[in-house]
Length: 196
Image (cartoon, rainbow, N blue to C red; front, side, top):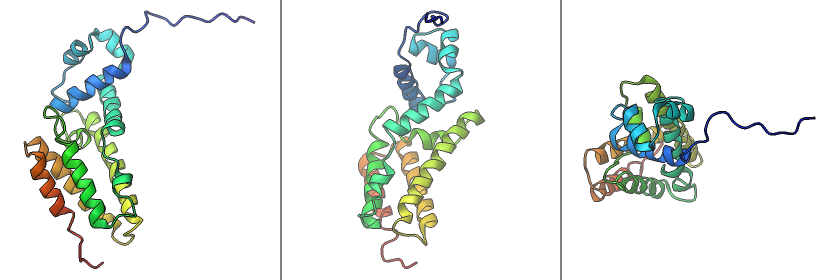
């Protein structure tokens, strides 16, 4: 039996793939998918196009990885923020507060990368990736709300995701964290005193 290990073909990568995804994520968040060219990416990552394609497949594939990374590292923790031991008002207030802070944390990359990516651009595949993640987020929100408001889970989830999209767009348009917090506090009271 042959126990020799075969060497991988080509030269070993001279860059850290995870670090590269992080850099690309920052670029996409700052400028949007359409405004980041392959030349921009290869320049920022310090690699040539063949190395880029070998590592990531395509710009859209790298964008998908950047979206996933963002969702895991910077996205809102919906399940924790909407924990069933909180009243609905408290849970929504916590969620909208977290969104206001997160979406304004980096002045160069405001808003939510997933929400803003789902709004559309010229690349349908990139937009579809962001929309798929946003739909997953909406489902997590809906499921968390259903633990306390079974009859109105869809209605409240639609409301929550619309408010989050508004907070993201407003952050992108330059509203500061204090104004967004006030909007979030007001929005969190929408279901107070309502009967199903």
